[in-house]
Image 1: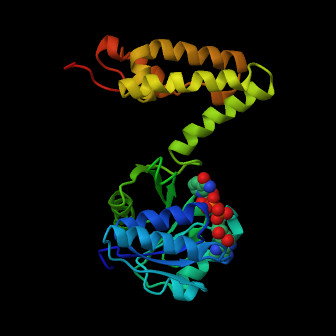
Image 2 (image 1 turned 90 degrees about the vertical axis):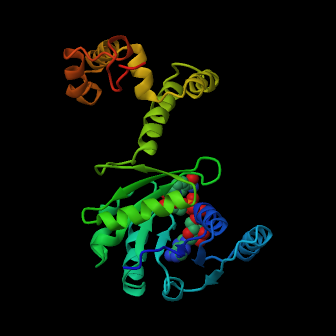
Image 3 (image 1 turned 180 degrees about the vertical axis):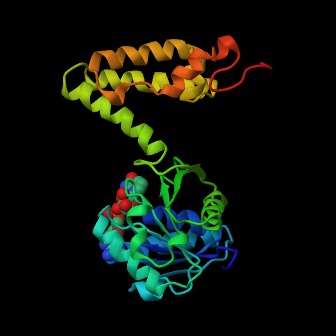
Length: 280
Ligand SMILES: NC(=O)c1ccc[n+]([C@@H]2O[C@H](COP(=O)([O-])OP(=O)(O)OC[C@H]3O[C@@H](n4cnc5c(N)ncnc54)[C@H](O)[C@@H]3O)[C@@H](O)[C@H]2O)c1
């Protein structure tokens, strides 16, 4: 397996594909592109070339009109075609037959775990999810293994994501929605309910949200840091209140949280919660 990724192939140059092309080009990768529609593609590629020329970045970007040519000398192939399982399976199967044996095949799918695509390829150890958010305004990418993805593949994918200054969010155990998308899903699910069920105006939600987020930004906390400050006993009681109200097993707080509370790991106030505060 070639150790270095130097050439990326993008299949599907729409909203996300173009961001990956531009960002990768700006970080010195050669890019091969294929899209079934060439609408606006030439102008876009010329624009990217102007940007790389201006920065004196020496790269090669080529647009092809078929999959066999576009994957020919690729080290990493990312499909960014529409979110349709059968289409992605077809594309994965074609890429696998045509790409060099060392190449990694990744999907930018927003929801489909790679385990739902891996059975159509022979190189089951060289496939993974690389799910980008906006590469310029929110440079994050969930990365997730399939059932047989090798550590070498995963590490290579992760290193490549880091090389274009995008922060990888590692999924340790396959789940729907990856890391950040899953959190975002929980937020939007209840926002939509509040709106649809008339609990509050959508403007009220949107007014609260930036103020709430600003607190996290100012203090550099995430949700776990925040829970540690509230107190895990308090969090547990609140979650139990929701659970008792709905009776839904999905609302039951995890046993792991109860165990922490029982051990007296209540957060900042006991100097141990999700994090340790012994020296603080
Ligand atoms: N839009 C987002 O914010 C976002 C964010 C993260 C991930 N994604 C995921 O990225 C993928 C692409 O989304 P998008 O928003 O860029 O879609 P898009 O519609 O903007 O782009 C898809 C591109 O794929 C091309 N295409 C369709 N069939 C093809 C084929 N058989 N071969 C080659 N090209 C083909 C289309 O012509 C189009 O240019 C989806 O899986 C989506 O879930 C989207």
